[in-house]
Image (tube, rainbow, N blue to C red; front, top):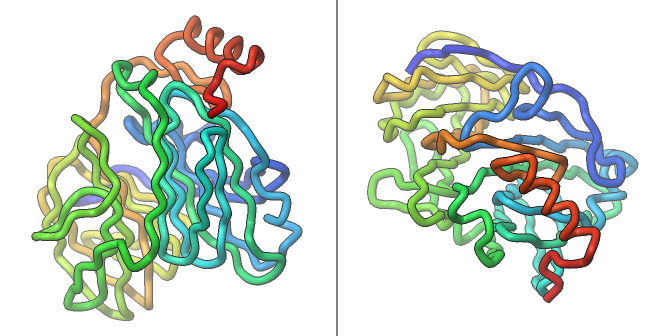
Amino acid sequence: MGIVKRVKGVAAQDGAGVKLSRIINQPAFKHQDPFLMLDEFRSDDPDDYIAGFPPHPHRGFCTLTYMLAGQMAHEDSVGNQGLVGAGGVQWMKAARGIIHAEMPKQTDGLMWGFQLWINLPAKYKMDEPEWFDYKANTIPEVELQSGLLRLIAGHYGDKQGPVSLPEQRFFIADLRLNEKGSEQLALAQHTTQLMYVYQGALLIDGERIERGELAVLDRQAATLNVTAEQDSGAMILMGDALGESISQYGPFVMNTPQEIEQAIRDYQQGKLTQG
């Protein structure tokens, strides 16, 4: 499973000024169907994250927050509240509309994690919203010869990650390898296959990928050959493209400009989900 393209994240800010690295949905690397956006936030300076992400609307897609360190509190307009800590996942299907807030539950220390946006097919975009919190001890772990694979979505062997959508196939996992460890992973093929190295450095079929780099993988290969130069971690993101038109305006992702205009009107008129 060789590398087709390499991409580095770009510095960005979101929410009330949270500093982050935007990997997917930056000028040089737009939507990777069905993945709309990938951000990494990592800082031990509270000034970089303390303002958090105050209430903001979403429509037409799903968000997945995965924490490596620190704690993030969540709440939304239908009354859900939760706290996601290191190793945990917060999954939100915004669908027809939700107003959501994510705020750090700490005033010092390392805050490190990811937010991933996954598109919904047109026929599901106006479904009722859903929300799930998955604590770290509910994320299945596959023991490897040289590390482990934490399964967030999809299956590996006889284990299944907790996140799923009907009639939509994707695989999301956190791969952690020990120094000089090597693995050959047999992964189901998808039309979009990505790996983002968040720690250390990895050799993918002999090509070196450093921390902060994303690799677009050859979708024809059936196995992923990975070697760690040092203790390393990477997010594996694989999904089948929807092949539908994408119209985005900030936190709204629909299929046409007219649907975006309707989403903006609905939000301005208070018609998004309010509980």
